Image (cartoon, rainbow, N blue to C red):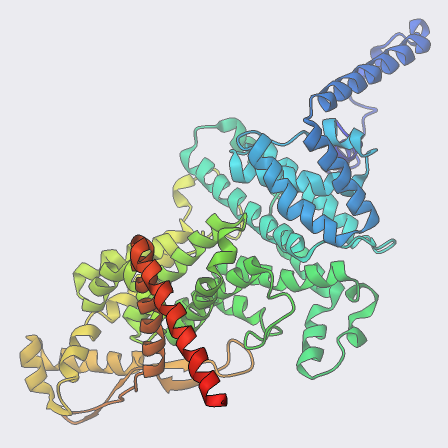
Length: 585
């Protein structure tokens, strides 16, 4: 056991016992020892022997390391000591993933304290960051147990305390993508622990684990996670820096000593995105968007090259808009990032995070299908084509409306929504009283969907007329005229939404987002339809690209035609050159 853990347990013991008076209690174990016959020299020899055995075990474990792994750890440590951000990025992004696939695909990396720490002379900052990678790999490739979750939390506490130590701020600088991954993994493990705790309490099979969870209510608590994120933002003065950038001023003027350091600046910026994610997981969608007030999504940030941060931002912003019934803004957010993913597909195919990018894009396509079904909108041609390929049948069923579309909405929502969690620990004594957050948010969302079940049918009839009597439409729909009037009011109300234009993400103007608009004059329905012109330029460009792709495919399958085409091209070039020479003469 290392010294930090001993200190942690001792502080926890003091906190629990308080000012307990041991003098009036039973004699302690140390009081029962015969001190006169106690040989201090023998005890010292036993301690030295024990330390020697530990050193031998550590040396044996280090000797079993593959040479490539040992050299990597030593070089990784060297780059961090030298603050070489470029080579540190290569070690983190390339070498670590390559060695993981080769040596530790289904096994954990070497123990941080027993194997790695002696190799790097117990350099605490490096060991802490390596431990973060060790547990991240454990979460990704293996199945962590409760002790692993506790140990990972303790390691994050050590790392954040090291950064927040105001007496001696670290001069360390990390690659930008590594700083984002630390924040992202910190929130992921927080969410994973909350789900694991709820699942354990619900099953009620392992009494020992439930008792451990009872005894550690502050481990991975919501307050602790929010405190870390808000502390990063406050220490870096990131909101003040973003406000200065908006006003065209130098952000370093308001950054202060800590905010001007790259380490605090990157962690402060990514903590804002982390707060967006945490508040969404907790179900507070308005507060989630409010935390993003300083970040202008309409302008490209210098952190935009961190793809994971971009995907997370637009996914959670779009989802918050969807849960706030601002479907037009949700469609805009999802379309923007999905178009970016499709244009950079070749880069993501070579990335170590390809699987997570693919899953996230599938979730966003599912959410986009829900939003388009509830708020019909013309999409970009490439996005629309991909949406039809992935969710075409489900989209058609949702657009038809009716009771048969409800299971489709539930299926897509359950697949694509975040893994919601509760704010605090569950009720251990009465597990049946615990509410599943996912089912709660699904129920709230489906209540709004059920109110719009008549909308697709209404649209199909209203598109055929410019004016129509309400009784005539009620006859077509086989429903009561007063019930239809209520349905028309719902249709009118749902077609008017708040749409963001500029400023805070919560700001916006109330506009009509539908291509159909109606007004009621007594029993007469006035209908106006806005015609959206088609962009023929995009259509020609897309089909021209398809034509060239088909042509290349045909030529590749027929070598003779390929040779014939090359000969024709050469003859045409010769003729053009000859004609040019004659013209010059």
